[in-house]
Each structure stands twice: as structure tokens, then as C-alpha cells.
Image (tube, rainbow, N blue to C red; front, side, top):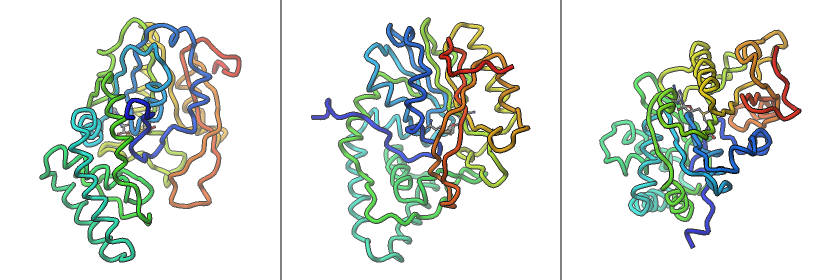
Length: 308
Ligand SMILES: C[S@@+](CC[C@H](N)C(=O)[O-])C[C@H]1O[C@@H](n2cnc3c(N)ncnc32)[C@H](O)[C@@H]1O
């Protein structure tokens, strides 16, 4: 039964937040979720927290998601509006790709043809959404990376018979998205969609811990320090307007004890350091446990320290 199936992220995405959910749960002020509330996620990516909220909070009145990546948002919109048509195309892609298993050369050829087709942007929106999911499932480590011309440039991954068409989940996601408003653009536009009991969760592209760990190229424009400051200003504005927010980011201080970038930026708010596992790293030795920041303007749980 579709209705009983729990919707879960339909993409692999750098910075997917499944690992952080129990920490986010602890940071949630109960008084928000015990009455009708609006959930807003301005950097939705694969939506790990979104789906958790949709599945677990019956008092959720409405959710609003946003991302600057228009191909990602097109995929959400197509899943919401045309799941069955999307499933038919994904089924074809899956059968064709699995049919090539055992012949690396032909698999590669197929992958790169589909990548070229995707970049030509000649397909209808449903076709583009199907290619988006196909590439995500078959590419190297589920990365989404584009060049300055917005051309997707991730090489093929080494998966054997990857699931390209998860029919049940697409139907469950489509069902869950019926109470979600889906926006494409800059995070600041979400301010227009608040209610008097709104909860924001921000998961922006993380500030890189080093020059080489820069996995924040999800879109053609980089999210640099200036953008991190613009985001903080937005959070301060929400705080003044009495909206609740939780934000995650990398813990640059864990790497360099003298780096107070976020401690300074969010001084006056509540900063907690939590353990998080990173999976997307080309070098397996670097896939270790790191601390990340969870910052909130909410009533503190005693584990939170107010940064000075
Ligand atoms: C760390 S990822 C979010 C990961 C997500 N929480 C998950 O579980 O998969 C950051 C997202 O921010 C988006 N983004 C980058 N700049 C943005 C901007 N100015 N406004 C809105 N979204 C932006 C990227 O396209 C990317 O999907």
C-alpha cells in the first residue's frame, strides 16, 4: 500500500543529513512541534530532514522547500505532479543499464551518452528529471557537480546493478510532497512563506575544512565566506522576527583550533558540536568521524553553550 510506505530521500546527496537527525531532534523545541507549525528548508538537497519531519510530525501544517539548483527542484516538482510517468522512464533506463552489466565499456558509453543528453537540456522536464535520478544513481559517489556552464561533469561510478527506479519510494515521496510548497531560488526568498509558528532548518553548503575538501560545488556559484555571512544576517533577521531556526555547518575549529569563523559569526546564538560521519570523500581514509556544528536561536538544551 502506497499510503503506508514511508517516504525517504530519493537521491544520494553530498552532506545528506540522515546521520544528524537524532541531534536535530534533541535541538527541536517541543513547543513548536506540539501545535500547528510550518517547516521551511531553504537548502533542501536530498531532503533527509524534510522527509523525517513529514513522516514524524502530525502537527505539521505545511512545509516549504527551496534550493538554488533548478534541476534538483524540477525533479521534486515532477515527482509531486507526475510520479507514474517518471517511473515508466526510470524503468526503461534501469532495464537498459542493467542489461549492460558485465560489459564495462558499454556501460560507460551508455552513461556518458545519457550525461550528454542531460547537459543538452533537450528533453522535456519529465525526461530531465529521469536523467537527473539516473545520473545520481550511477555516477561516482552520488556527487552533483557542474562546471561554470552548468554542465554536469561527474564520471561514472562503479556500482553493480544500482537501483535506478525505486517505484514504491517515488510513489511515497509523491504522496508526501502534496503538502509541500516547492521553490527554486535563493534561500532568502523563503522569508515570504513563514507563518506565526515557523521552524527553519538550514543546511547550507559547508565551509570547506581545507582547500581540497571543497564539496560545496553543487551549483555554478560557490557558497563562499561572503555567502556564509549573508546567511547569518538572514538568521539574525529571522530571530528578530521571532522565527525559530536550526542550522548545521562544518566545525572549522575542529581542524584548526584558532579558527573562530563560526563561533564569531554566531556569537549570541546557541552552538553545539556534534559528531557526524562523512561518506562522500574520494579518499576512504578521510571518511572518518568529524564534528559538525548545530546552531540554533532556540531555548537551550543544557548541552548548548552560548558562544561568547
Ligand atoms: C549541504 S547541501 C544540503 C544537503 C541536504 N540537507 C541533504 O540532506 O541532502 C546544500 C544545498 O544548498 C543549495 N544551495 C547553494 N547555494 C544556495 C543558495 N544561495 N540558496 C539556496 N540554496 C542554495 C545547493 O544546491 C545544495 O543542494
